[in-house]
Length: 204
Length: 181
Picture (cartoon, each protein chain N blue to C red):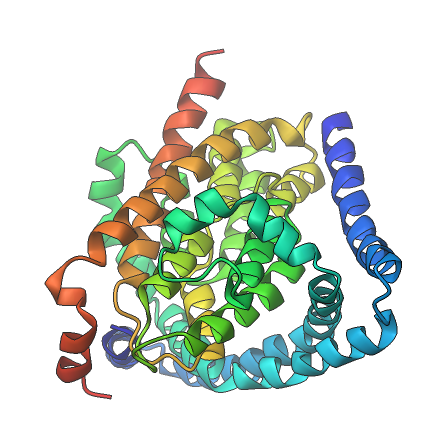
């Protein structure tokens, strides 16, 4: 999938850019974006180290496992292939908790850690497992309870009551998360997303 | 303003109670907190570096597409569908660019708030949309990078469906709340 999207984006950009006479902008975008990507990644180092360090402490103290056990009824249903005591489960729980609380810079390290752990129990290395797809879909649907960034923008714009969108956001995000889970559970059964088939079909 | 400042106080409080609370609890459990912290923090650098190649690939492709005016064209194509679902014209570009770029959608939202006023229906819809969707391609790229996954199966379609439902739900719930009260 990513192969096609990536190739499509690049080829379309060049065609469009040439046709529209925006060649110079496209060329500039290539180098600027490459630099930007590294800036983003390096910018994550400090936050990543901080939260992974704290997470290690929480793990050693048994806090993560405690937390994971508390919401295990939901987690077991969402991720039937992941053992409840596995470190992947703890990382996923922390990621979702951080996302809900709006601690975005904590959510990313936990999420990346969770993906590393999920790959360790993946039966088809290099190809996403069902658990990974479910975890990602929930993440991309945003499970934030307090949309801090959007509130900040409204406040900066001089809104009378910037927090009015809290309620509407919670309802909208609930809809999108439910849709994500339904979609992911439906798709994982479709033959076109079958693991073995995709291994054979997609060039890599 | 008061609810906004209360929510800031709550999230700051949560943040600080995590930073101090976790080591405190662990110390009570006789965990050597500093050594354990350093041990865990070591992975921070490797993990950040590990995602660089994937991130460069994704950010460059999206950056090129944006510079070439691809998103404007996409907005043009998808406008009839989104219009049919009741998405107001001004928020169409925001809805479309949201899955691809966080910074671009941030600046679009700021533009909407500036142009239509911070108390307008359009600003509320835009802000709700931002609060209920994610930068799907960024998340997919870096999360799969951490696991060295190249074949992503149904993760992207499911993520895009979630974004789509988030956009439509934002519009409808805002209609219900802000236009009928």
